Length: 241
Picture 1 (cartoon, rainbow, N blue to C red):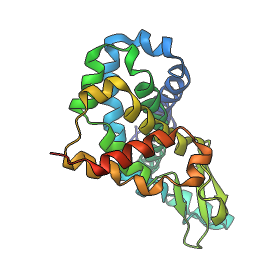
Picture 2 (picture 1 turned 30 degrees about the vertical axis):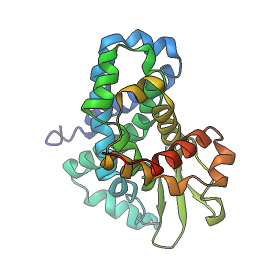
Picture 3 (picture 1 turned 180 degrees about the vertical axis):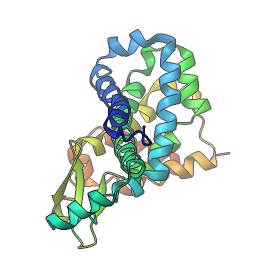
């Protein structure tokens, strides 16, 4: 497609993935829709696991894109003229991949929340094969939807657009930030997951990395995290194998 200079056609092909992820994030809000997935949810868990790993490894790099965007019209025009069809397509692919990965954070939260309505194989794939908790914690620590520009301005990703926030408002959660905390809550407090997920010293250490971020400001916004806080405090006192 790049050789044919048909970059828009390639972009539309890539954009279908982000559109489908967004559609899933809307539909899976309802437990009966999640239940209807049945065994096919195993493949969805595999896809989400890959995307979560990608978000952890490349999220910060992707979120830094556009910070050096020229403000002058002539500079913008010169930059566009200098782009080759291949570089334009690659740039579009990165943009769509970031959108899809951000959407997958929401889908992951809903899948964890409604996992009890799905076959046992889905729970096994999520907990034993991919250990999805270990992908959630690093995203909470280093969220790719928060960035600081070279000018020292803080920005957060809201509805797929970067919006400037005051330093005093950094602790105010956006919808995307809340999804990861809710995913953690449903993972920790799900009785079926607790039966299968055994904390060794490594898993314990990884989970407790998120403990320092649970403060009064966060609990005021998401009171359900008080259960997660209590679980972490109890886990800290336990001896893990």
